[in-house]
Length: 271
Image 1 (cartoon, one colour):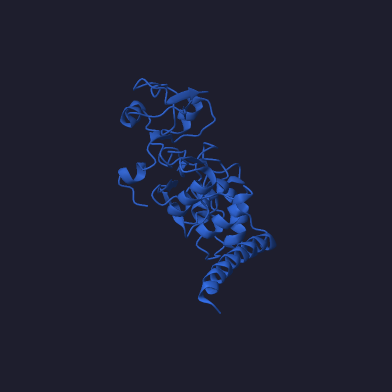
Image 2 (cartoon, rainbow, N blue to C red):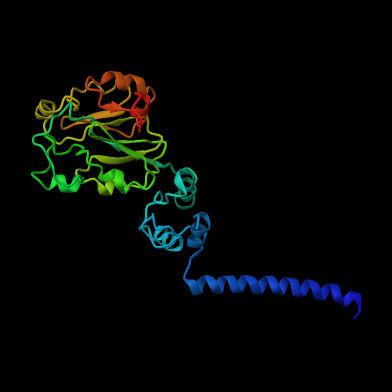
């Protein structure tokens, strides 16, 4: 065969083969039922099929992510780096991660138990007995249900209170689901402060049973001129306003319930 025919035929076969592969890939995608977004998510996931995310495989997890039925931070092997990549895929490059915080500062020293609980050392079990032994029904019970549900070991129990290590936490929300009193919440990972009190009691009753409770004094409102915290029904709440001077808000609180997520580490508490 003439060399002048070999080269054109080679190019034709190359492009035809490429087109066939593309068509085959599309057909395969339709066959296995994976969308483009699912394929991208599956490519990001580690492929261990460990089941720690709550799904039987990484492929199933990718499908749940696309359907909006799974949390982006539930992949324990991937950690925070993987969550950031998934958030970039599903929420855009500007999406921020989240971190869990415990909205309770009342240790048993600050708020003694009403009775001695000697049952199963699990928060839901303790709460089933007269709403639990703690005087505040919205407090941390301290029996570690959140700890056992955390896939990345980011929680410890210190002096009867759950404490989260924000450096390890991926914001998956497993601890939030496990907590029967609703004391754990997820906040933006770049938010420097939160309120470590969640009591729905009137301020006077609240401070009567817990020395570490928010007293509703409003000292946290505008210490630096910005409404970064507001007091609603006697309880301080974080607003959407950005914080310029964290130290001024921390200093303003007489009961020290306005805290940084890294409060434990900064105060020498080992997790």
